[in-house]
Image 1 (cartoon, rainbow, N blue to C red):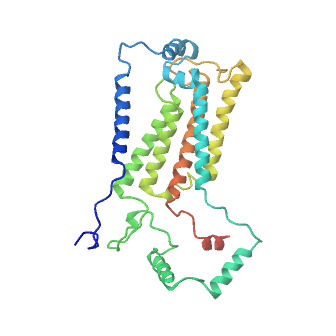
Image 2 (image 1 turned 135 degrees about the vertical axis):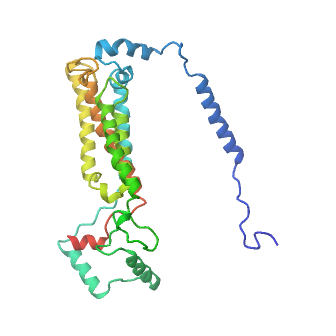
Length: 315
């Protein structure tokens, strides 16, 4: 008797394994070629690197050539990359945004819900669906139907599955200790322009802090900080600030992204003129944009919105 006739699954079929091998070999060859072509210690610097070394300190009062290239010499490229990120965030928001509630007459929806609950609380449901909903309500903890905020709030010996939003006390303590350190590190990256960093990596660090707290404490503890109505405004403020800084260079100095501020002492926060303004504005843009995109995608797999019936009764 064959495995198929006995009801056992057969071997997993393979699909174009030769193509997968060919693609893997092409990627490996590309990586090997790039590694061999990496400039060595005594290799001649590219033209843009030599130019940055010449103008970073005398023209911008900044001792970090990479930041001078990103926000000065190649500032227009950074401007374009930042707004490409903005376009990607807008696309994610459009694809993941929840459907807007329908607006009707004042009190119409609430009156309809009350009438429906009075005469037929579960209309049109099959018996199995009614039983499933009753079982779901039975699993909800008492006191408003919310999951416990931490595992400590779950009584000892409670049956599985674990429904707490936060993780163990060890993880929560580590998050409390590490989150401020990471936040300060992100601010350091954007504030000290004479050291490697900038607004883009600083924004990624801030998003990492938010995700760290979300993983440790659950969505309910951070939802006020990442609510779309607040984060979207901050993102627009960051984008508008970048536009203003860059366009003022064109209006005052005749060149887009030109410096129009007095330069401070080298190796101070004020060194670099508009570089620090550009970098700080990008911190807001990147941190808020990535937060909107990430939590918009995460929300597709989680039901964070209250039930429609509960929304109607709270109005």
